[in-house]
Length: 142
Image (cartoon, rainbow, N blue to C red; front, side, top):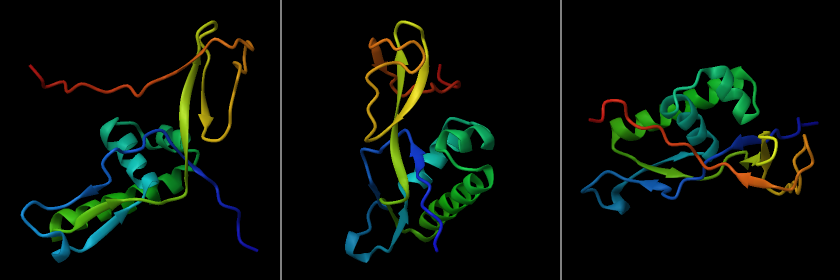
């Protein structure tokens, strides 16, 4: 019997899902498919600069699984850049997770897609707000 699927948590869904080298017609390109969970691993590790353990916790996977995901993602991106292939972002084993915050007690938690919390799990208040993605600013910007 196969092991049940463990959904990876993803906090970011991209607006743009296709990248291609400039000046090369689409019909002449090979594609590399980067899954949404691989993109999330790249975002957490390389863009946000988190260590592997916090990345794994946020994605709801073990640290060794996170390492396999990030290594696969980096290999695909390197292949696309070196060999001039297009990158298509799609698929994967993931659930979109939204961060929520209670305005009354300040408690923060993650709500997986499809699950609805009408009240704070800590204080049972219904005064909730979504937490938007925090964008890091470049430190070298003058």
